[in-house]
Every structure is written in C-alpha cells, then in structure tokens.
Image (tube, rainbow, N blue to C red):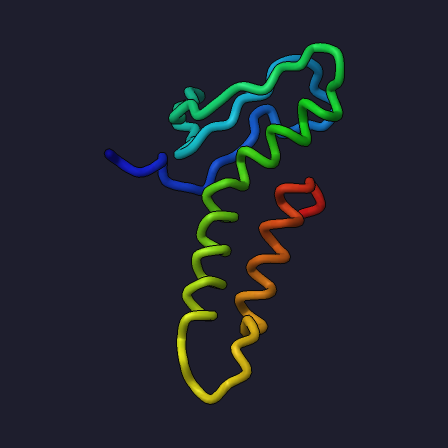
Length: 105
C-alpha cells in the first residue's frame, strides 16, 4: 500500500469570501497561465460556508499534523536524561500546524 500524497496540501480557492466547493490539492503550480495540481478532496456542504472552509483547512493540514505527531511520539521514545518534554521546536511546529488547521496561520 502506498502512502498519502506528499504535503503540503492547500485549499483552493484561498479566499474566505468564496462560496461553493473548496478543493484540497497537493503539488499546486501555475505555469504559463495554466494551473496543475493533484486533487485530494472537495468540501461542499452548500449550506454552511464557514464549516465548509473549516473542514477544508483541517483536511489540508493532515500531512503536517501527522508529521508533527510522529515527531512528538519519536521524541517521547528517546531515552535520555532530559525530562521527556517536547522541544521548543517540536512544540512550535505542532502549534503552527494546529493554527493552520484552525485557519489562524
């Protein structure tokens, strides 16, 4: 079984004022006026645009959330003389990804 599409994933269109379906994509790029991307998912509740956007942000943050959690778990398993708390860098990474998922980035 292959792994998930590589991150980062992003929500398109980016504008919070957009109404309608939102696409979660990876490897998005524009060249010569044409866009290409790998489609991951579409969020379209039709009746609640705010929830639609929140769901899309959470899905788009999934690869980074997974990596941040793996780093925290890996750090916790390292046995040394430290007190086994996440490092500042790991905590900052986790907080950044949470902010992305919640739309506060």
